[in-house]
Image (cartoon, rainbow, N blue to C red; front, side, top):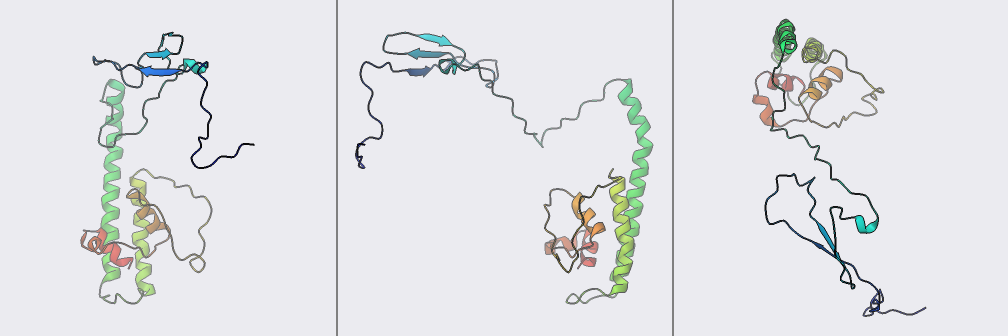
Length: 216
Protein backbone atom coordinates (compact mmCIF):
# COMPACT_ATOMS: atom_id res chain seq x y z
CA UNK A 1 0.00 0.00 0.00
CA UNK A 2 1.38 3.40 -0.94
CA UNK A 3 2.31 5.76 1.85
CA UNK A 4 0.98 9.33 1.81
CA UNK A 5 2.35 12.40 3.48
CA UNK A 6 0.78 15.83 4.08
CA UNK A 7 1.87 17.15 0.66
CA UNK A 8 0.69 14.25 -1.52
CA UNK A 9 -2.83 14.44 -3.05
CA UNK A 10 -5.47 12.07 -1.71
CA UNK A 11 -6.94 11.38 -5.18
CA UNK A 12 -4.90 10.41 -8.16
CA UNK A 13 -5.32 12.69 -11.21
CA UNK A 14 -7.38 11.45 -14.13
CA UNK A 15 -5.70 10.38 -17.27
CA UNK A 16 -6.15 12.50 -20.36
CA UNK A 17 -8.12 9.82 -22.20
CA UNK A 18 -10.99 9.82 -19.64
CA UNK A 19 -14.07 11.87 -20.36
CA UNK A 20 -14.65 14.86 -18.10
CA UNK A 21 -18.04 16.45 -17.54
CA UNK A 22 -18.47 20.18 -17.04
CA UNK A 23 -21.85 21.64 -16.04
CA UNK A 24 -22.74 25.16 -17.06
CA UNK A 25 -25.94 26.82 -15.83
CA UNK A 26 -27.05 29.74 -17.96
CA UNK A 27 -28.85 32.58 -16.17
CA UNK A 28 -31.75 34.22 -17.96
CA UNK A 29 -31.12 37.89 -18.65
CA UNK A 30 -34.85 38.69 -18.91
CA UNK A 31 -37.16 38.43 -15.88
CA UNK A 32 -39.59 35.53 -15.86
CA UNK A 33 -43.15 35.44 -14.60
CA UNK A 34 -42.68 31.98 -13.16
CA UNK A 35 -41.86 31.43 -9.51
CA UNK A 36 -38.30 30.40 -8.55
CA UNK A 37 -39.53 27.02 -7.32
CA UNK A 38 -41.02 26.11 -10.72
CA UNK A 39 -38.48 27.76 -13.01
CA UNK A 40 -35.35 25.80 -13.89
CA UNK A 41 -32.68 27.23 -16.17
CA UNK A 42 -31.47 25.13 -19.07
CA UNK A 43 -28.50 22.89 -18.44
CA UNK A 44 -25.66 22.44 -20.85
CA UNK A 45 -23.31 19.48 -20.61
CA UNK A 46 -19.90 19.60 -22.25
CA UNK A 47 -17.30 16.90 -22.52
CA UNK A 48 -14.12 16.32 -24.45
CA UNK A 49 -16.07 15.20 -27.52
CA UNK A 50 -17.68 18.69 -27.83
CA UNK A 51 -21.19 17.38 -27.28
CA UNK A 52 -23.80 19.81 -26.00
CA UNK A 53 -27.06 18.74 -24.37
CA UNK A 54 -29.86 20.98 -23.17
CA UNK A 55 -32.32 19.70 -20.55
CA UNK A 56 -34.80 21.21 -18.05
CA UNK A 57 -33.77 18.57 -15.53
CA UNK A 58 -30.40 19.37 -13.94
CA UNK A 59 -30.21 15.82 -12.56
CA UNK A 60 -30.70 14.06 -15.90
CA UNK A 61 -27.01 13.18 -16.20
CA UNK A 62 -27.37 11.19 -12.95
CA UNK A 63 -30.32 9.22 -14.28
CA UNK A 64 -32.74 10.91 -11.88
CA UNK A 65 -36.17 12.29 -12.57
CA UNK A 66 -36.96 16.00 -12.43
CA UNK A 67 -36.82 17.49 -8.96
CA UNK A 68 -39.34 20.12 -7.89
CA UNK A 69 -38.82 22.31 -4.84
CA UNK A 70 -42.00 22.54 -2.73
CA UNK A 71 -43.36 25.91 -1.74
CA UNK A 72 -42.49 27.13 1.76
CA UNK A 73 -45.00 26.13 4.44
CA UNK A 74 -44.03 28.72 7.05
CA UNK A 75 -47.03 30.82 8.08
CA UNK A 76 -46.50 34.56 8.00
CA UNK A 77 -47.86 35.88 11.34
CA UNK A 78 -48.06 39.43 9.95
CA UNK A 79 -50.39 38.52 7.07
CA UNK A 80 -54.10 38.11 7.59
CA UNK A 81 -55.16 34.88 5.94
CA UNK A 82 -58.77 34.96 7.11
CA UNK A 83 -61.06 34.48 4.11
CA UNK A 84 -63.69 37.09 3.35
CA UNK A 85 -67.34 36.49 4.12
CA UNK A 86 -68.88 35.06 0.99
CA UNK A 87 -72.26 33.48 0.55
CA UNK A 88 -75.48 33.27 2.52
CA UNK A 89 -74.27 30.25 4.53
CA UNK A 90 -71.33 32.13 6.06
CA UNK A 91 -73.50 35.13 6.86
CA UNK A 92 -76.12 32.92 8.59
CA UNK A 93 -73.41 31.26 10.69
CA UNK A 94 -72.17 34.65 11.86
CA UNK A 95 -75.66 35.77 12.82
CA UNK A 96 -76.35 32.55 14.73
CA UNK A 97 -72.99 32.70 16.55
CA UNK A 98 -73.41 36.30 17.70
CA UNK A 99 -75.43 35.34 20.82
CA UNK A 100 -72.78 32.75 21.72
CA UNK A 101 -70.08 35.40 21.38
CA UNK A 102 -72.03 37.77 23.62
CA UNK A 103 -72.51 35.05 26.24
CA UNK A 104 -68.79 34.31 26.21
CA UNK A 105 -67.96 37.99 26.63
CA UNK A 106 -70.37 38.29 29.56
CA UNK A 107 -68.92 35.13 31.16
CA UNK A 108 -65.38 36.42 30.67
CA UNK A 109 -66.18 39.82 32.20
CA UNK A 110 -68.06 38.33 35.17
CA UNK A 111 -65.31 35.82 35.96
CA UNK A 112 -62.67 38.51 35.67
CA UNK A 113 -64.58 40.79 38.07
CA UNK A 114 -65.31 38.07 40.63
CA UNK A 115 -61.75 36.77 40.54
CA UNK A 116 -60.34 40.26 40.94
CA UNK A 117 -62.58 40.97 43.95
CA UNK A 118 -61.63 37.65 45.58
CA UNK A 119 -57.95 38.36 45.02
CA UNK A 120 -58.22 41.83 46.55
CA UNK A 121 -59.93 40.31 49.61
CA UNK A 122 -57.13 37.74 49.93
CA UNK A 123 -54.49 40.49 49.74
CA UNK A 124 -56.26 42.93 52.06
CA UNK A 125 -53.94 43.83 54.94
CA UNK A 126 -51.17 41.43 53.87
CA UNK A 127 -47.87 43.30 53.52
CA UNK A 128 -45.39 40.54 54.35
CA UNK A 129 -43.47 39.63 51.18
CA UNK A 130 -40.88 37.45 52.91
CA UNK A 131 -43.12 34.66 54.26
CA UNK A 132 -45.74 32.50 52.52
CA UNK A 133 -49.34 33.62 52.46
CA UNK A 134 -51.49 32.25 55.32
CA UNK A 135 -53.73 29.28 54.63
CA UNK A 136 -57.00 31.17 54.97
CA UNK A 137 -55.90 33.68 52.35
CA UNK A 138 -54.94 30.87 49.98
CA UNK A 139 -58.39 29.32 50.43
CA UNK A 140 -59.97 32.57 49.25
CA UNK A 141 -57.84 32.32 46.10
CA UNK A 142 -59.75 29.16 45.19
CA UNK A 143 -62.53 31.46 43.98
CA UNK A 144 -60.08 33.07 41.58
CA UNK A 145 -58.84 29.66 40.43
CA UNK A 146 -62.38 28.55 39.55
CA UNK A 147 -62.90 31.85 37.71
CA UNK A 148 -59.72 31.16 35.72
CA UNK A 149 -61.18 27.85 34.54
CA UNK A 150 -64.39 29.59 33.42
CA UNK A 151 -62.27 32.16 31.57
CA UNK A 152 -60.64 29.31 29.65
CA UNK A 153 -64.13 27.99 28.95
CA UNK A 154 -65.13 31.37 27.51
CA UNK A 155 -62.06 31.23 25.27
CA UNK A 156 -63.28 27.93 23.81
CA UNK A 157 -61.39 25.42 25.97
CA UNK A 158 -64.42 23.44 27.08
CA UNK A 159 -62.36 20.37 27.93
CA UNK A 160 -58.61 20.12 28.49
CA UNK A 161 -57.20 16.64 28.11
CA UNK A 162 -54.43 15.70 30.52
CA UNK A 163 -51.82 13.01 29.96
CA UNK A 164 -50.17 11.61 33.05
CA UNK A 165 -50.28 12.99 36.57
CA UNK A 166 -48.04 15.72 37.99
CA UNK A 167 -45.66 14.67 40.73
CA UNK A 168 -46.25 15.94 44.28
CA UNK A 169 -44.63 19.19 45.30
CA UNK A 170 -42.39 17.32 47.75
CA UNK A 171 -40.80 15.40 44.86
CA UNK A 172 -40.89 17.97 42.02
CA UNK A 173 -41.41 21.46 43.43
CA UNK A 174 -40.44 23.30 40.21
CA UNK A 175 -42.48 23.39 36.99
CA UNK A 176 -40.67 24.44 33.79
CA UNK A 177 -42.90 25.16 30.79
CA UNK A 178 -42.70 26.95 27.46
CA UNK A 179 -44.49 30.29 27.49
CA UNK A 180 -45.82 30.58 23.94
CA UNK A 181 -49.23 32.19 24.53
CA UNK A 182 -51.50 33.66 27.19
CA UNK A 183 -53.33 30.35 27.71
CA UNK A 184 -50.82 28.22 29.63
CA UNK A 185 -50.32 30.71 32.52
CA UNK A 186 -54.10 30.71 33.12
CA UNK A 187 -54.18 26.92 32.98
CA UNK A 188 -51.25 26.49 35.38
CA UNK A 189 -52.79 29.04 37.73
CA UNK A 190 -55.97 26.97 37.86
CA UNK A 191 -54.30 23.54 37.87
CA UNK A 192 -51.32 24.01 40.22
CA UNK A 193 -51.56 27.51 41.75
CA UNK A 194 -47.77 27.91 41.64
CA UNK A 195 -45.54 30.75 42.76
CA UNK A 196 -44.49 32.13 39.41
CA UNK A 197 -41.24 33.77 38.36
CA UNK A 198 -42.08 37.05 36.62
CA UNK A 199 -40.63 40.45 35.97
CA UNK A 200 -41.21 43.14 38.58
CA UNK A 201 -42.81 45.32 35.90
CA UNK A 202 -45.74 42.87 35.71
CA UNK A 203 -46.81 44.03 39.17
CA UNK A 204 -48.09 47.33 37.72
CA UNK A 205 -50.37 45.67 35.13
CA UNK A 206 -54.11 46.07 35.82
CA UNK A 207 -55.88 42.94 37.11
CA UNK A 208 -52.90 40.72 36.24
CA UNK A 209 -50.56 42.49 38.66
CA UNK A 210 -52.96 41.89 41.54
CA UNK A 211 -53.18 38.17 40.78
CA UNK A 212 -49.39 37.97 40.43
CA UNK A 213 -48.99 39.50 43.90
CA UNK A 214 -51.44 36.94 45.27
CA UNK A 215 -49.34 34.18 43.66
CA UNK A 216 -46.36 35.66 45.55
